Image 1 (cartoon, rainbow, N blue to C red):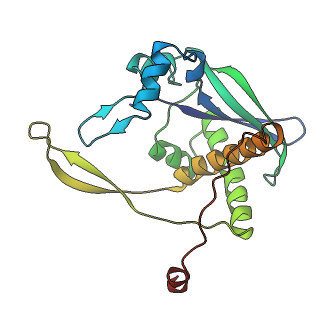
Image 2 (image 1 turned 45 degrees about the vertical axis):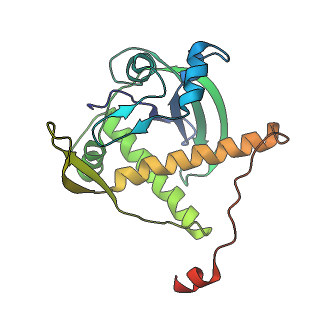
Image 3 (image 1 turned 90 degrees about the horizontal axis):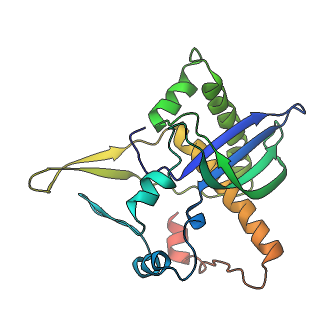
Length: 223
């Protein structure tokens, strides 16, 4: 909720057919960035935002990332590039499409808040119902991925507490991943999978395939 640069959002809508319309919405920064403009040139030079323990160096102006393009829950319509898909009750993708859209966020949830909605059925409301439905579909998607040979490489994440005066790390805190994290992960994976399929279909000659080298036999034997 305290996050200012909210760059993605999820939506879930029950359809009369019994299926669900799920949307993965990404903040549409490109609407404000045109090729060859000073903003585009400077962003190309920086290439990415750099995150340090006590600060960050932004690739784009904060006016864009934390206000104009941020999908914050402030009652204002926001521009997105969206992947919209229809899933049946078994989480099979019936159809999907990509589009530019205008959304208005209904809630801004931390992972802990979303997890509380999953754990406590007494929490009512449309947002809580959507979170639970999204999770049921996400669990079905995850089960299918694992059955099809997907590899999950779990690694622990940590964050640092920094002294405000000395800027030195004072504590290392283990980041706890909960079911709500996996919910988000599943839809981001699905949106990327559908985007790759779309690119392969319509932009095959200019699409780039990321290929990994064959795994080392010695390391594989250790696994």
